Image 1 (cartoon, one colour):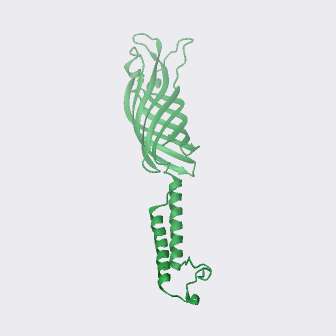
Image 2 (cartoon, helix red, strand yellow):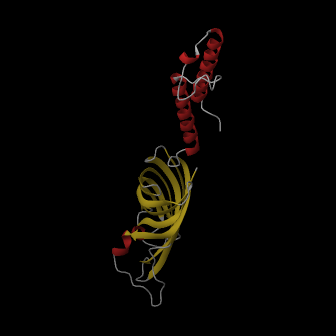
Length: 256
C-alpha cells in the first residue's frame, strides 16, 4: 500500500537532516567526548548514524501519519450511505369502504370474498447520509374480491380485482448498533385496482385508480457489509375510490 503524501514529506525531512549532519561532521572536528549522544547511539560505537531529538520526533510523526492513512484506506467507504436496491414478498391487506354500506346475500356455495393476497415489491433508493435518503418502487398487492348486488335484481355477484402501486418517498433510518436499524418512509403513491366489474353499482366498484399519501415502517438486520434482511409494513392509502391497501413483507436489500 502506498504511503500518504504527508508521510513522504516527513520522511524526506528526516533523511535530509541526516545528510546535513553527516556533511558537517566531515568539515568540523568534534572531540569524541563532546559529540552528540542520543538514546545510546554514541559516535565511538556508531559513527555513521547520529539521531537528534528533532529527527526522532519527525520519525515518530511520519510513522503515525502512515499508520493513520493505511487505516483510513482499509476502512473503505461508508456502507450506510449510497445506492441500494431490494425486493420483498408477503401478504397484502385491503380495506373496502363499500363492504359495509348494505347487506349482500351470498349465493349458497358461493366463493368466499377475500381482502388479502400474495404481495411483493421491488424498490431502489439512495441514502445521502446515514439517516436520510429517498426511495422509489413498485408493489403488487395481489387479488381482492367482494360480493356486490347487480342492477335491477336482488341477486349478488362476486367482483374481483388486482391492486398495484408506484410510490416515491423520503426515508429516515436509525441504526441500533452495528447490525440492526429501524427505518421509515413517507411519500406519495399512485395506486390502481384493475378488474372487469362494470356491471357493479358505481359506488361499489373495486376497479379504479387514485393518488394519495403513503407511509412505511420496518427494520433491517445486516448479514454482511452489503446485504441485509428486511421486514416492513407499507400502507399505500387509496388504490381506487373503494379500496385501500397495504402489505407486510420480508425481503433482502443490497447496498452498493
